[in-house]
Length: 278
Ligand code: NAD
Image (cartoon, rainbow, N blue to C red; front, side, top):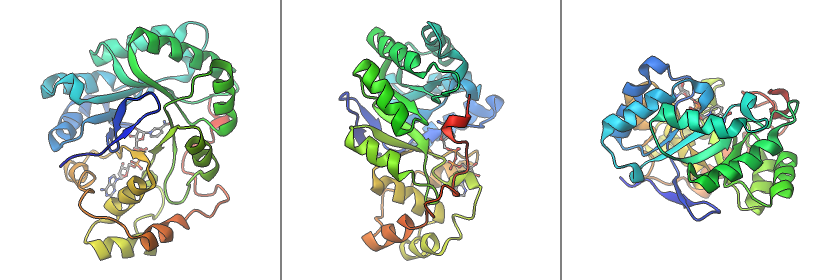
């Protein structure tokens, strides 16, 4: 099984499907990530705030997989955006991960009430120069935030990692990103299990037509939309199920039936609004 890669605006490539570790218990992280690597995942999405970078690092070391075959993302937390704090935060993340560089470093939230996200982006640009990360990007940034950081630095993020699933498709941010060469990473790709996505007729019908599970069907919808995804699961069976999405293709009609599941009024959002997070 080969996981497709996408090319970022800086020329580096990223596996389109990975494994996310939000809310993975730090005490369980090494075992769960090692199992994901054993299943075939090569892209891990963590963050300083998840508290499990050490476990991710131990799993990477124990796996014996050559570093250049792995893609590791971590993120700068909101309370480290000011002054030179990002320069210290990346070193601390690398220490916890046991790595000399990550593949992608993200500003986790714009946290506009703190007023530091432009500084944070300037510091990420400097961090990339040191080689401590290959690529830099942002998360939870809306078009206004993206416009501001690009105007301030002339550097466009490689990705914007945003909440995105069938009930909340963030069309304005996706369109902005698409027209500026920013790839979309969809967090909560399965809606974090917080609404009845899998029982939705459009999802259930497409799943039945292809002999796949509803989760596989939704992940396939993301992949065909061009989104990067890293579903999370603690269950070894689901970890494998979520990787088994490269042997079928949704039809344009099946894609269109899922496209209309967002009511368009923001009511499908399961996480926080970016302007409310500090
Ligand atoms: P998700 O949509 O991946 O949902 C995970 C939940 O879906 C699991 O806990 C499980 O209950 C269910 N699930 C997973 N596989 C399933 C399957 N095959 N069948 C049935 N149910 C299944 O949500 P997430 O974990 O929040 O998002 C994925 C990743 O995105 C995270 O682990 C993290 O890396 C990242 N993330 C980033 C941010 C951010 O602010 N940048 C926020 C949240 C998550």
